[in-house]
Length: 100
Image 1 (cartoon, helix red, strand yellow):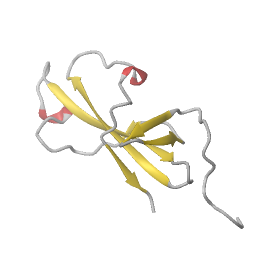
Image 2 (cartoon, rainbow, N blue to C red):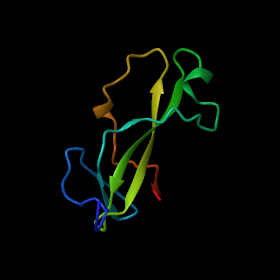
Image 3 (cartoon, rainbow, N blue to C red):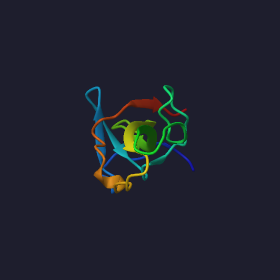
């Protein structure tokens, strides 16, 4: 591909989030990272009825076309019915990492 390889910034089907005052357009679906989180609160470390944490991420771009990965940390209760993924609060971003 010749020329500018940056993605175009516009409204996407995946929505947008704001972190530290900067808006990011999501360019793909949010998915589980399967990362083991610190603090002994991962799904496999807790008993039934106890709270656990899990991480999710999605690709994103900013207005200048720079690419990022957006991360969220959510809580669940082991043994309870898992809520639909769209019921979580994606406005509460954990961190944003620049892709190189």
